[in-house]
Length: 413
Image (cartoon, rainbow, N blue to C red; front, side, top):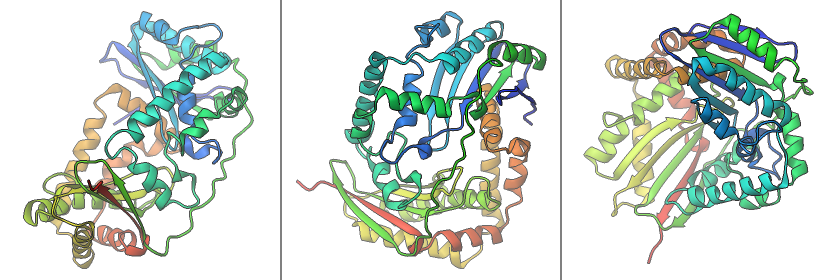
């Protein structure tokens, strides 16, 4: 059970307090309602680039990291297609330092050509190292643009191409900041050894005077229903051929989400899953295989991916996957098998609540979507899924006309 109190400042900043007196620490988690999906299609990678720029110093704090370290804090951030998140973990007696650090860069981030050039180089190098020069690193650059033709999920958070980052101007950066990095576009969660009263006082002191921004009305293009299978072949210097199959699936907060999540577990979570047992262990077609979902706020993807054994062709591998899919569409999952994956999923949910930081991020994520009151319903929703729900998801989602297939081939010498 994750408990919390909440209040909102006049400038629109929503604040949640999760009190936990069993720890001497606090987590300060500030989540902004902006991700890669909110970018201009001709200026992608901005949300992620801006995450880096936020550590370039503010008007009153030249070096964010040193100030955080002096308070005994560890800090980091991450960007997804849906959101951008910043967090510090620090001793509870230094909690006010976190308020000082985060409020100063929300109010007065230091924009300088030097900072932009430094972070631009860092991000370009990350693009090259993680996505272009690493085996299988560019898979999602191909998969997203294959699966999505219209919705901005079609590009990864790193951006479509390096040129978009190379061409970013200081004016672009400032416009992005003042549009999205406003108190009324953020969720603050303070968790740990604190009180709601303390957080109210500190929030009023450090954040209340920051002016709100213009409301951002998200109006993203809707992805058309896919009606035919798409295929792409990519050759690269990789150790093994690989197969990727993705299917459009529901958004994170739709009623059928947990059924689809459990379906992915039945098919491809761990060595007891159907895909592994049949295609790796029994038929020895794959070296490895798994299934998962993207967990996106808007309509996401159901993913099956695996590396092939050397003598197997991509077509043989794909055909074998379709046979496993057909079996789960033709016959209801046995109660015992379903309960097994439910128990695993429940265990994962319980374990995810152990760490204070995870709890803070979970509250922020649910609150960002106006779903904070549903945060403690997850296990009940998992256990309520039945075999009919699994069958319905399998038949609706795992169809050829709803699939995009990437053959990732080892370069022939």
